[in-house]
Length: 406
Image (cartoon, rainbow, N blue to C red; front, top):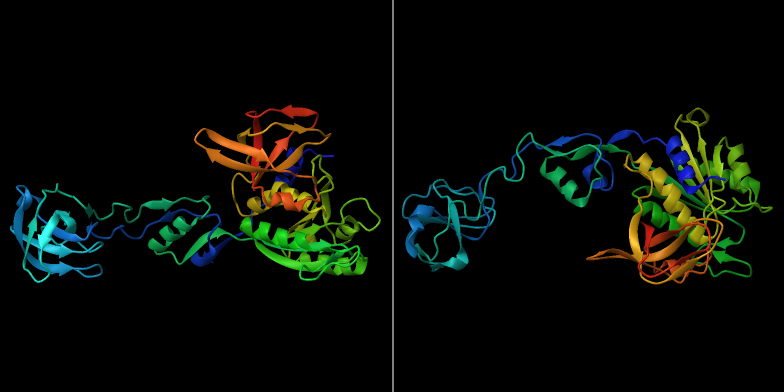
């Protein structure tokens, strides 16, 4: 049975990034840039005013208060028609181009004037360049503004738009089929009958996939019958990744591993030394066995909801990050101080749901009142999981421990 680190290494050894594609900017958030980006313009493209006020020659108002003649008004989107000469000023709005001859802006709050008047009295003496944003201050034409390998955020998307990029070269967003298995499952809008439960795992995994930046494709419920499961697996193998929930343990109706083998999927590992989630399964459909010549990656997640959630965060998210070109792909732990004493017992490392928050002195974490892999309710209060090593371990408040955010 593999350790968590060995299982993650096996996943990274089998999964390779998706092809590079040109994606519309509106669909690029969360994807990884595949090529450097240079600006095709200066930003700002001209000297502009940072304030509503008056564009002046700083030398004219060195002995303020000084009264100047108003020669024109310039608003954003318009171009000044008259240069500012000695004894003159231009009324200017935020973002408007600076007129020739002017070298400073005096905010409107520091001036006295009437709307119908033709003069302004400036009460302060600005320095040259006051409240003026120079052309190219943010970036220059031809300057590299984004480098390959970054994950595109809202602000970097805005920068790409400012640089005139309607499309951008990125690693393709993977699709993830999500298939829940089991005769006990009913749709979430249906009240369970005797022996039945709602199919909450699929909905949870759809949200986790979306949070990871991939495209979820819910496939419904596969019954514990080989023909039906085989049909659903074939449908799921149209996606880049297939996540099955349930059917991977050692029960009589745990048919997933054998049906995946029948579909041509090569098992990479089955079972990991982890709690919760020991029965997790991972395999690959090699390119030569796929009808379209593209490999697929398949995860069989345990049916207990917290087991499924934890295995997604540890293993499936690692594969998705690798597919999307995100480096590092493996989970990144932070060190936090426990806020309360805790005792952890078990023969496997435990990933325990917890609340992580940041203070001026660093990260702090508190385990939630979690009862086991069936207890999804308690995880609603969690935003992370603590790694408690195997063994009989007693922790006191203030002890430092590894934590993975989700």
